[in-house]
Image 1 (cartoon, rainbow, N blue to C red):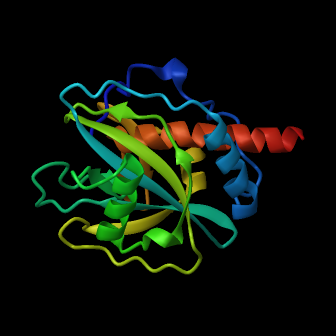
Image 2 (image 1 turned 90 degrees about the vertical axis):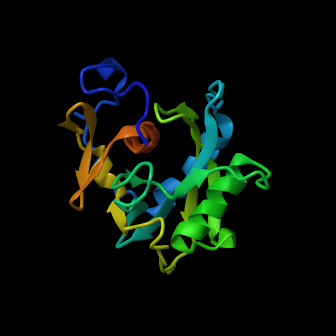
Length: 212
C-alpha cells in the first residue's frame, strides 16, 4: 500500500535521526517489555476514515541469534491491488471482525499460519491513510519462539525475516518514495512509514537504556 505523506522530497524534518548509530543489541529482553510499556502509555493517533476502508496489519517480532527480527511478505504479482509490494501481514477488515486487532491477528494467521495464541500483542501504532483508499491500524506483536511460517500462496509470494537493525540505517531514496532495501526487497510506501515510526520508538528506548 502506498501511504500519504512520505515522498522523497517532503517531510524530511520529521524523520528520525539516523546519524546516531544504535550500538546496543536489540534483544527480546531489551525490547519486549519496554515496548509494551511505551505502546500502552502513549496516545494513538487516529485518522478520519471518511470513505476509506479499514485494514489492519501485524508487526510480528521475534528474536533470532540474539537480535530482533520482523516478518514481512511480498505480495504476488497477480494480485489486483498492491501486486509485488512488500508489506506486513494484514489486510481488509471483515464484517465479522470485532476490532482492528482481530483483523490483524486473523490476517496474520491466514497469510502466514501464525496461530493467534502465539502472538503476544504489545500494543498499537498510529493509524494512517493510504492513497489506495485504506485506513491502516498497525499492531506490534512478539511471536512465540520456534514458529515456522506457512505462507498462503494466494496472498504471499515470499515471506522473509528482516533484522530490525536494518531499518535503523538511513533510508535509501527509491524515487519517488523513500524506503529501505532489505534482503533484496524494497520496503516503501505505507510499510516504510510504519517501520519509520516504529524504529523511532526503538531508538528512543535504546537511547534511554544507554543513558540509564
